[in-house]
Length: 112
Image 1 (tube, rainbow, N blue to C red):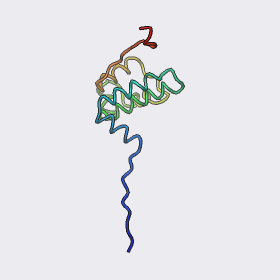
Image 2: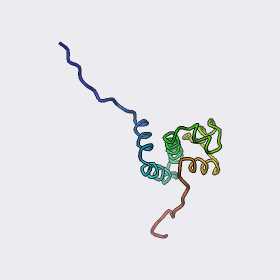
Image 3: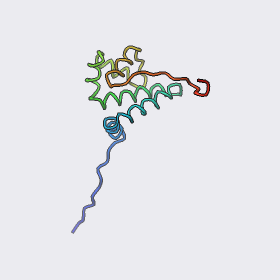
Image 4: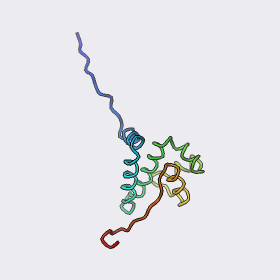
C-alpha cells in the first residue's frame, strides 16, 4: 500500500505580495514608501514603478485602476513597468485611484 504525502500548496512570491497588499492597506503604504525611498539607487526607479503596479493589481487590477485614473490600460502597463516613465499627472491619478497620495519629506531628517 502506497502512502501519499500531503504537501502544502505553494504560492508564488508575486501572489503572496498581492494578497498582502490587498489585505493590509498599511502594509501597502509602507511597501510603496520603501520602494520610492530607494528611487535614486540603481534600478530603484524601476522597482518603485513595479511596486506601484503591484498595488494597482491588488486594488482590482490594472484595467480598473487605469479607468479610474483616466489612462488607457496599455499605457498604464508601460508606465508602471521597470523601464516606465509615467508623467506626473499619470502618477498622481494612479495614486489617487488606489487611495494614496504623493508626499515629500526631507532627505536628511537631521537637517529638517
